Amino acid sequence: MQIEDLKSLLAPVNTKIVLLVMDGLGGLPMEPGGKTELETALTPNMNKLAVEGILGQSCPISAGITPGSGPAHLSLFGIDPVKTEVGRGVLEAFGVGVTVKKGDVAARGNFCTLDANGLISDRRAGRIPTEEALPICEKLKTIKIPGVEIEVKHVKEYRFAVVMRGEGLSPDLEETDPQRTGAAPLSVVAKNAAAQKAADLFNKWITEAHKILKNEPKANGLTLRGFATDPGLPTYKELYNLRAACVAVYPMYRGVAQLVGMDLIKFSGETPSDEFKAVADHWNEYDFFFIHIKKTDSNGEDGNFDGKVKVIEGVDAAIPELIALKPDVLIITGDHSTPAKLKTHSWHPVPYLLWAPASVRPDTEVEFGERACMHGGLGVFPALENMPLALAHALRLNKFGA
Image (tube, rainbow, N blue to C red):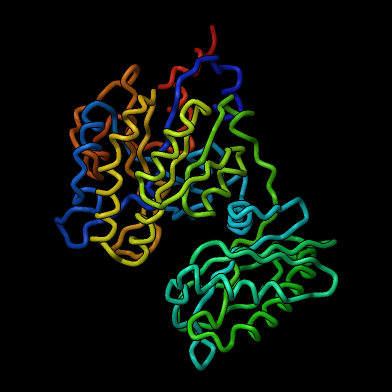
């Protein structure tokens, strides 16, 4: 059944759904016979939910395919990322409040460190802090290219967004990140003739940007990724009749939430408890809450096994704050796997926990971890089925057919 077909089944009830996404949650043992990050973490609260709920594994795209964060989240939201490709640039731009309309071209920028030969020695410029990156972005805002309007805005740490507006621009452009150190940043290449104008303009902008950056100690280079324009996605209200809200620290995830019509909840702080408090403060205003935890993924990409374990334990310690709100459905999962062993996203299925006291059929598993999820009652299923599962367990779907 297509996700759009759920509209005819939607029931007018007032149940509440919480989707807690620990980015890059899935992991691997560092040594044969060892435990994953999630299995190593002390998670008494999630284990209790596992006993009372049901486990499984979600597949973000399809078997063997490693997803980016944008497509993986779209799957969880019920949007097929293969049919509806959304570039990371538009997600970053929306996340920091930059409007991207049809015909605009947005890109996500990364500051990087170049050696004396112009080769990338650090793809993330040492993860420079926001206070160092902000003034550099201000300098980039001074670049003018005839015939187009350009907007640059800092995102977080080494990330920024750049949006180009003008006539005849196409986002069909190749990224400039070679995805490895020891290589030079690539030029913007048009995928087709219609995109050549945009490619030429972005290359001119990059040339001017490198003149500005050349004397920076860490961020003396940049790469551009995820060229995109507004894809015009359906909203949560249109698809599911849900008043939906997003609680996330990192702008990119606020961006993808906005694209599907979620309101952004503003809050202070960056801890799981800070995010859960924001949910509590707005509990009566919404039917659906998407909560995003980023640092599981960051530690995985850095190869920091122990750091990822501590982030998971920090989330677990705050879980009682969510349970106290008495959600009808609580789903705890990740968008994809980011094993510290691999230091990158991977194709491995993602641990998935569904807790719904009024409707769940518990399996026999007693803890939340990869091996337990392999034996869970939900089995391995497409992440696209997350929203039908959530709606069904929230008693928001009527039966199909007579």
